[in-house]
Length: 448
Image (cartoon, rainbow, N blue to C red; front, side, top):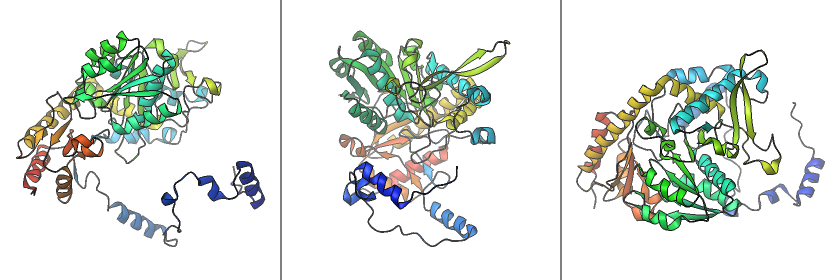
């Protein structure tokens, strides 16, 4: 469609209908101190060659993996991505496809989605998965809503050890649906079992936990499951680092009702704000509560195998008031990349990758724990992330950044009680030499 600009008369008519006298009136809800008053400081147009050079020089000011040594995690992990992943996902038939609106002629994309769903089910130990969501945060919110819709209850209990950024998204959903959120505190790095028993009752729709949790600690899912189901609530488990499932039991084996999480670890490059891929799966009895689309396999009248969109609980395909949520452009390309990466890894490869992550993280914990003034905060089992108590978290990060090392996340940003604590992550990308350099650099920081 050609671009058709609005005439001044049309613009005025739209503003009249909107009930404002100017375009600025449309943004009146934005605090004035957050609005840009002056014009953007952009240079005049430049030749493409100069523009590429200029943008590269801007990009080089960033600290990116490859330029620095990184031990950041907290929901975004540095994993090796085989070149085959994006070589295949970047093929024109996948890369340019928007979304499979014409299922009868989108068999390749539909088969890819079907394979993705199958792999998510096998990873999580569940019966059915959807075709992906935006990210791990939106997946957590959707899991919460599934429990609310299924039980008809309006209270949700969540572990304080869930990724705070993911939790913020769930809180946004809850606010819009008048859902009461109840926080269950942690104890020793994992969700407090006695605390949870006090908070879960007959009004609870869903209980949300993360495993491994935000501190990298492994939760006792079986103990939590008994508490949840004793009160008739649904048990939802978020998996922020799915590589852990190469070693840990799938949440489905612990009788979780809904499993959600972030699939960035499989073939998706780290980036500030995505695009990532949200994963969600459930038991068959809750299949009609799953948001988005579900692809199925069938045969046609001639007995030939084909793929179809079996269920589509989105507002575009069913009555708007019956839709579970507003899911528009999904993350099909990211889901495809995750599918390719998982198929390249296979079961044995995933196990080996998980073992390598565990080994490197525990080596890093031992080395850092041996630095004077540094000690592990928790004794709970952990996968590839752990919390370290230190004399001064901000100074540690600042001094190591000057040496080209991103040493971790300052937990005080999320938890005031952990002011001088670092969340450190090590994956298969962190060599022994890198970890040794990290510990040495921490030992050289001079604290007042």
